[in-house]
Image (cartoon, rainbow, N blue to C red; front, side, top):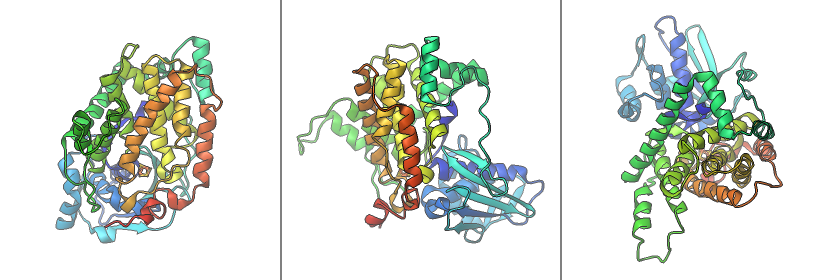
Amino acid sequence: MLDLFKVGIGPSSSHTVGPMLAAADFVGRLTGHPERLEVSLYGSLAFTGPGHGTEGAILLGLMGHQPDTVPLDLVHSVVADVDAAGIVQLPSGPLTFDRERDLVPVFEIHPAHANVLRFTAGDLSVAYASIGGGFIAELVDDELPPPSPPPTVPHPFESAADVLRCCGEQDARITDLVWENEVYLHGEATVEAHVDEVVSEMLEAIDRGMATTGNLPGGLAVQRRAKELGLDLVEPDPGHSLPPTGPADWAGVFATAVSEENAAGSRIVTAPTNGAAGIVPAVLRFMRDFCQPVVDHPERVFLLTASGVGALIKQGAGISGAELGCQAEVGAACAMAAAGLTAALGGSPAHVENAAEIALEHNLGLTCDPIGGLVQVPCIERNAVGAIKAIAAASMSLRGTGAHLVPLDSAIETMRQTGVDMHAKYKETSLGGLAVNVTAC
Ligand code: SF4
C-alpha cells in the first residue's frame, strides 16, 4: 500500500513516471544492441503526452534511468540533447534516434487501456499500459492481464467494510492494520525508512515550491504563485480586505507549491498520482504546523492510514485520470489526506472512514481537462482546493460521531461507475471541458 507514495518526477505519474519505468524495463530485456527502436504512444499518451513530459521520460527510461534517482538537470535537457545529437545512449551503447520518426503518436484509444505504449526493437515487441500512479502492466496478447492476486498479509481486506470490521474485532486502528501488513511484506526497517523518505521529500518539495518564482514551462505562461500567496497570508495586501480564513489557507499554499514543482518536472512524491501530488503533503504539513496530533508517530499514522484508503480506492475503482477522470486523482488524494489527518488527530476508524467518504463524495464527477495537455490549469488550483476540502472533511467528521449515511465503499463504487460513464473527452485527452473552452496561447 505504501507503494502509492513513490518518489519520482513531475509532471504526471501515468504519462511521465509510468512510461519511464516501461522504457527502462524494455531496454533491460534487450539481449543485444538494437539497430532501431520505435515507440508507439496510444490514446491519452498521444493526445497529452507532449504536455506531460512523456517523450523525455521515455528517453530517460531508454537510457536506463529510474524516476526516483534520475538527475533533475538531465530531465530538463534530455529532449534537446537527443534532438541535437540524433542519438540516445542506451545502456548497451549509442542508438540513432529521430524523435519525429521513432516516437509515433497513435490518436486512438487502445482497447486494452487509455494509456498504452508499445516498444519494438528487432524481434522484440512489448506493450505496456500505464495504469495510473506510476504503476505499469505488460499487455498479454494485446490485453490487460487480470490483476495478480494480492499478496498474503495478516489483515487482508477488499473493502472499507472489511477494514472497519477488522478494526472492531481486534480493537485496532486502520494504521495498525496497514503497518502490520507492510511490515509483514517488507520488514520494519524498510517501512520506517520509506515513510521517513516520503515525509522528507514531501516537505522538501513544499519548501522548494515556496521559494521559487517565475513561469512554469510548457508555453501557457502560467506564473508560479505559491510564494506570493504565502507572503499575502503573512502580510495581507492592503488592496484587498480578505482576512486569512485560518490555517487551512496555508494548506492551499503548500499544495500549490508542490503542484508547481510537479508542473516544472521537479522531484515530488506521487500521492497517489502526480497530478494530485500536492494534497497529501499539504495536509501533512498543515498537521505538523498547526495541529496537536494525539498519537505517537503522527506522520507515520497519517501516511499509513492515507495509503490504506488509497489502496481501497485503487482496488475498487482506480486512480487514473485517463481512466476515470480527475475524481480518481484529486478525489482520491483528498480522501487519503482527510483520512490521514483524521487518524493523526485521534479519530476512530469510523471517523476516518467518514472523513474519506466526505472528501471523495464531494469530488464525484470531476473531469480531467488540462489546458494545453499540461498539468497546470486546472490541476494546480484543484490541488489547493482539494487540500482545503480534505481538512474540512476531517473537521466535519471529527466533530461528529462517525455515523453517516453513505459508506465509503458506496462512494468508491459511485466513482467507478461515474468514471466509466464519463465521455472519453473528459479523461485526460484535452478534447473537452476547460481544455477546449480556454484558448491556450
Ligand atoms: S485535471 Fe486532474 S486528473 Fe487531469 S491532469 Fe489535472 S490533476 Fe490530473
